[in-house]
Image (tube, rainbow, N blue to C red):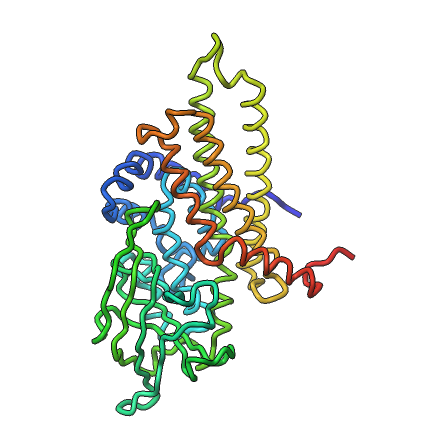
Length: 391
């Protein structure tokens, strides 16, 4: 059992760490304040060949896999979860295409993501169907005017990157909308310029500002048969895609926790009270120590999950391990950001310090791509089904 990263991954980590310190860190507060999409950060990622980390080399990527993307996102998230989300969006919508897409789909859609000439977003949730995915009512019916084509109608919501995307991975009911059978849902690639596609409301978010989140409206959108991902009735593809994403979301949590506690630790060494640095206070030191332990525990869970996902271990029997990483790391982000803010006291609540930004950004991570409660349910199911067992 080898816990050391390969030379290639260590070089990647080093390079992204420097880029994050030079390009992301100075811009984090401005991105949060302006709410504007940080095109300069996207361009920096493109120049550093970070947009294709998880995409195979034959389609223009670097083939670093989920583990490579996890390591990169961890470094970026130390300073900006908005910038980390930009990297995450190179994998979330492309995951189903990589898992079940045709060769033609991979060549057409993955290469643009890797090269930075196109962007994508992922459409699963709906106003009445968040955690209850089977409650979706976006409907796809056969197109009478094109063999094998489909017509989509519905509204997707809470889509990160919706306004910036050139294409979308969309899930819709291809059976009766009241059906709760898994074979009633199918995945489609919907291009932004297809007639009937429009961006609806843009959400006003508590945190992770700069990458727009909002609605995608589908009004009699005609989708050709070659844009069906995998098989009709392939809802399992949504779950496989989300399962494989767990360590990537977890990396955002680890990076945020690291960034928050580093910021607060440096402050505690400079701020004096009662004629000594507050870092000399045992209560402060113990909290820093406990967070250090939890960050390393989260990292071990997450790197293991990422390595397994790269090996195709994201089917049912591996779900509890993947969910553990997402649950633990994202809840840790909330805990670490809260403690970091508390360590700064009143100053930590003010916008002159990054702690309040970390605090706002952290909560999103426990909600997106499966809430903490959903993860606990999946972990419990794994134990009850003996997928996770100790004898």
